[in-house]
Length: 430
Ligand code: CAP
Ligand code: MG
Image (cartoon, rainbow, N blue to C red):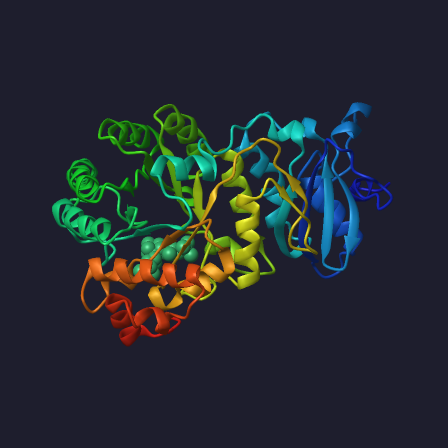
């Protein structure tokens, strides 16, 4: 009598239905486990199965079983009946396709690479409140990347000092002042004080420049506190809230998406902690899955890397992440991306940040084009002539890229850029 039924979840002749959700995994079986059995175990454990055959199995259960239908080398595609998934519940999706399966002894490694979400599933999610066009209209910024900076050092300033650095950042021409991912409401910089101090400086900067100015102020905390903080942001006329989405969790982001949307707040998603599970090419969950999940839930923008800065992410990955967030239809790309038709679900901005300075701006824009949020933090506050000059130098580098001229050529008539190049040239931080 056989004790397990994993092979019931494998059918390489199966063609997924239009309404099925398809996942792409990279997997390595443990010793003594065949590829087919390993694929069957992934499909079983992430849908209706368990480790042993059962005393009774109602025939209708077959309709809910996942099917491993394509096994090629270390990659397997698995089709999931849409009835497995609760409408509009992204957290439950993760419990299925990114849950127990990572801990199975039958696998040495497992990585969830991508998922194709069918329209019947997508329709239960609202997606981003604004979309890229909506953000550009809201900020009145067209024809160039949106720009921002985090006061540095990361934390330590009082709310007043933070706001003063923010003012210099805005007066240097940047659109946004961003909280760092580990700044929330500390004894030396309370959230409430930062919200009001920055609002005063924002109003001054808007008055003097005639430009819209905003900030990504970090509300990350328990969900109830995040709701209170989002309400305070709206009271002070802010149009963004920042959330460390991996730390806060899928359920909290889902709750805040509607709460912020009702307040007219876009969500800036910081991805701190993503590298705990997306860095190892053999195991974990890819950044493109996280980016897709966050667009589905409805953040307005999320960090996607620089390729040339201080943090991980190749040029190819960064371009792919930008496509996942910006395109209405993503074409499949080998064993790293599945096709995705987003239907009417709005776009989200990729955010490029991390070790950038004016000398690296053309490299980043060559990768992304101009539809991105460009964050240059140490790269403006470390400018030899200070924050305002650093922001001006960054904007001069953007102009150079748009004009199709080299930075040294541009620097001949732009002293702030010249001074930035003197210090950093095209140095790529490690
Ligand atoms: C960048 C940053 C961002 C990283 C996050 C930092 O500051 O504020 O958190 O960009 O990485 O704390 O390092 P610098 P990613 O510009 O001074 O490096 O964007 O890859 O998620
Ligand atoms: Mg940071």
